[in-house]
Image (cartoon, rainbow over all chains, first blue to last red; front, side, top):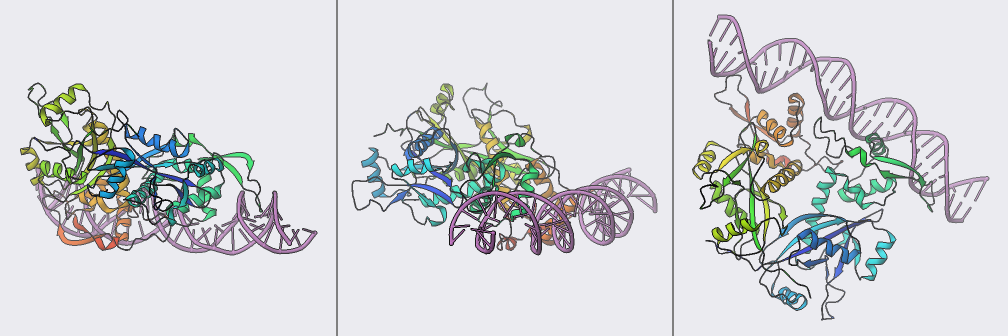
Length: 247
Length: 247
DNA sequence: GAGACTTAGCGTATTTTTGGCACAAAGATT
DNA sequence: AATCTTTGTGCCAAAAATACGCTAAGTCTC
């Protein structure tokens, strides 16, 4: 009979990605603590302890709703961080104070979410005291949250090649340039605009709209929408071309 | 203050993939139970409860060593299955009897492993009472193990495109045909042999050996080894060609 | 109205990929 | 020794992907 660990507290931490048309951003919150010294210093990913009779996806959704006010957002589990030493003594003390849990170990589950970063969202999160930071500009977070973030970005890159989730980061109507910027930001690459639009239009995943960009000091770009029908008939026939043939 | 769940038992279940040169296979074990009625019927993935002060990777490694006798094998975490209803009353009873744990909930973490399926391995696992079944021929497993298996296969497909882990399923020295068969089996596609070897050799990831196949009733194929140096210089320069340029 | 700026799109040369056909080579089988 | 099977190679034409020059068009600022 095994010596079994049943006193693990399980938490979820969410990497909430947003895209402002230029850079890939992540929503960060400040640790809530009585000590004013810590205030404004320690950034972390939004997270929560899992409740009784709650699944992990439910817990992650709760965190997401708490920080963004949104429900039903795309959420994907990434990796579990279970190193017994990932939360040190002082961190456990903080958890004990703040959550009222006294445990020797906290196992956390990473999630990433994709949200449309419009002005309403920015206003909402600002009122919550949360901040959107460029992925490239984040270098330190509390505990192992930096690891959770890096891991989520890698998973996001893989996932974008397999399903049209990239569009979840864009507004319902978007320009070709926005989509291109998004992919360039996520993968850190450069894409030739002329060839990109050739492939993109050839793939049939975009639907044209009547509208154009507004308030730009140059020729306004057409707005497009995602054509979900284009994904019904996956061309798995030849090769691995179900891997983002439109990229 | 939240109402927090701290009485979750955490287990790991391992999807152990092997390749026999033809088909992708998974190692399955029979549920150990007092009731002879169940015997030979209920197949499951090898798994275990996590112990105190043990990380999840350690637990997964322990399971892997128990079923294959191997240590230091490639192991990758996939998804957590945390639905409170995933283990029903009778299953909990079995867990209580067998593991001596009485809990209302078992959260399990999926792992997949890649092993070289040689004759020694087959003999070892046979003595353990475990069976290697073709992935395509597995249609029912206990609890939600079928879900864990399907999920692991999807993750494996993605991972193979990003790193040279496919070779962990092949013997140290292998033929081009074996590699091609492996990819065809994993992705369920057909690959043109002529072009496959062009790209493969152009990528420089194979090292020729002096040896050839033995005991085949046709012209024996050359044996190759993986050239690990070829992966140091990732060509992330242009486009997304770090996605399996050799495929 | 003249630039500045960026989208939108055409066209084309070049390179790469795909895939067919032919055929030699090496071992096992009969 | 003839036959069979699969590997391994060369050639080559069609198709697709890529690189890139160039022009027109629409909106803003000055």
